[in-house]
Structures are given as C-alpha cells and as structure tokens.
Length: 112
Image (cartoon, rainbow, N blue to C red; front, side, top):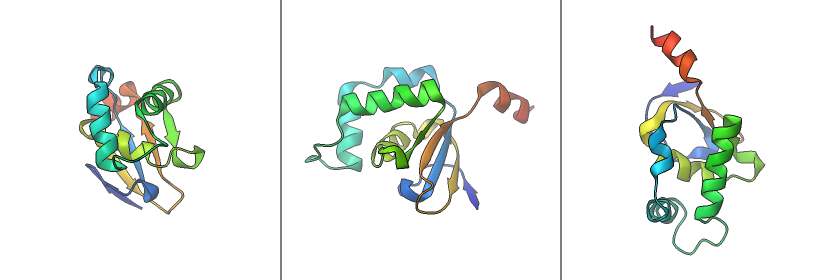
C-alpha cells in the first residue's frame, strides 16, 4: 500500500485521511457547485449541494464515508474541496474508496 500526501483524483482506488477544520463549514453553495461541476460535470442530476452537505455532515458525525455506501463521486468532490485538510492518501483496490476524519488528539500525539 502506498501512502502519499496531497490530492489524488481517482477516489475509487484511494482513501483520504483528513484533519477537519472549522473552515470546512464555511464553504458556500457556489463553491460546492464549482467542485461538483469540476469533478462530476454540469449535467449531473444525482449529486447536488444538499447531498454533498449531507455527506459532509455524515463524515463529521461518523468519522468516515465509504464509496460503497452510494457515495461514488461525492468522495471525489469532498476530497477536492478538502484538499487542504488531507494529511494522507492511501491507494488501494477498486473497492477501497473512502474518506476518514483523523482524530485531532491522536494526530497531535503522533506529531509530538
């Protein structure tokens, strides 16, 4: 398994570890629309801003978001928007796509 810092666009084979900040909640609907258009395209009916915000809420509440739970595309959008929060990218197989929120206290201990 490779570990790489930064953004990788193929989320179906990548898992992202993010350290969320308060700045995450300041992303506007217009910014989300831009991320959706960039990652999925303008003519997408399946993914809209409310769905992305709901998925972000689930990531914050549960600490992870799996692609196999119907979040294909959403993870790419979140990874693009949260690029500044990504602390590691784990490349795996085609079913491994997910995004995981790192525990701030554990990260602090590791860095000490």
